[in-house]
Length: 282
Image (tube, rainbow, N blue to C red; front, side, top):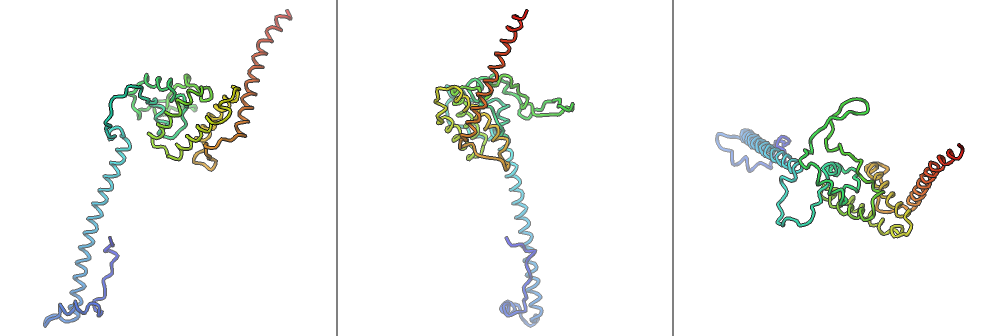
């Protein structure tokens, strides 16, 4: 709608408005008076249009504010406004991750696959589902200061199995559930498809079917390390896609894994051998 405040009163003395003049002219009204009358009528009509524009704008603003508030409430309280499905009570288990994991998913943070395995989901069922996801807890920081943080972030990870220590069967369980959770929490579709391609590439890699356990473990370690690095770098100039496996990095991962295990074995041998030598010297 054109803003009447920006409208300019036309020149009613021009030939363009001659016919309008003729309608107003009589013995008591000359050309100049007719022109002033037309200007006055234009001012009155323009003021009316301005009031109408303001009223329309005010209604539109109120509607926009109401729609924004409604959208925010729908976003915040999804369960309240979710449509009721016409479906029977499920006979099998209902896979609901722990609230701690849900909080991380909403933020788009890295989540260990363990939480989406059968064991992790079973553990979530035993947790307190009544915990308020906005509840806060007091924590003493490293600098000695006490700060309030979301209670959901306080999760004991001592029982959580790292991704690289899961079995391939558990990885299969977890990835399906995690992909569903990503969609439920509205992750971007390109990010979801990237994870699908990533996990399929790992399953199709020759090492996945290798008779050598080190190669299978290297794939799992690669999955764990690269997923965490991806979450740390996404949105920065150092970001990348997980979809295509980097064989050079995989080879380094395998070498590091074998070196680490060899070092651990040597350390164990030294611990066994040294007491034996000490006994022999007495």
